[in-house]
Image 1 (spheres, one colour):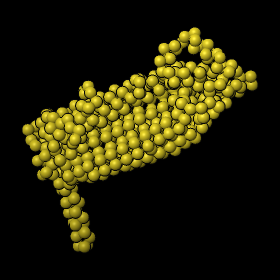
Image 2: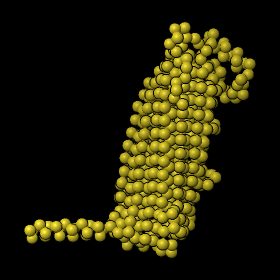
Image 3: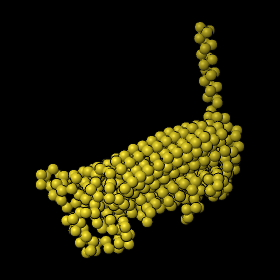
Length: 412
């Protein structure tokens, strides 16, 4: 009996001691957050009271939880980074962070992470930051529910909203980013998912990634960004149920795909872009269930692209459905709906009995002489289209949909 009592008391002591390792430290305006961080033990929670804290360069090198109550303001006073984290298992939640430094040399950021694992950045507001959230050589990141906005007016005055370099196994979800150079920028990032983010009115790209394999982008909205979305030098990408809207300009695209391979583009909506998709040097991509509506060009497919498949997509109200810079296009186009198709369906199987040629003579002329776009909707263009239907000599033989659908798919 005495032995059992001893074991029980020992276990009780261990539990109470373990609980004693984790404490809550409260910080009020006028107190130093850095001093509280230095005083805290790994695993402690720091709760920051409402108010304004004119402090920058706060460095965290241990596992801590920082929680802001009613969004206390961390004002960097235009001096470098506001928060710098070089530790694992750190949580930053519920802060309003403003006024970082403006340095391209130092990449000043509202919150910057180095060599960190399993960190959470949740429900923060970042305003007037050069970079919003900046991560390097980190993994297991959870970036959720942050609002990141900049009022910069020129591209060189601001960095990226969410910036990841050499990171992996992370999640970026339900964030809002506007006014930055690139909304989300990924370089050498793998096994990461971006989901349900709203990225709009950024100066260059809403999403920009390079050398970032095995990632997925699901149900995001990229709207009214300077040059749309650019994805480069990457393989095994899933882009599913995203919206690419109102990206207008001489070099603006819903998506620019350069040297992308072995990927899927499924169920996306491309609405009111100068070019829905521009592809160069890309191979083995499946485009299925997408809607291209009210774009200048729905699709620009360069001759350097091959082994791509476009199947069961809707093309409606676009000025040009497709264009290419070559006469040999080694891709598969089948079973799409084209609102410009004027064929017939005698056997009533909802598949046109006459193939559809999505590249017309006028689009070829505009590709070679851009100023010819001024003739759009003129009698001359109508005449060219009728001539092309009789003598379709300008359309690459492989750029034909042999089974065009008579009705649009119910996909958006």
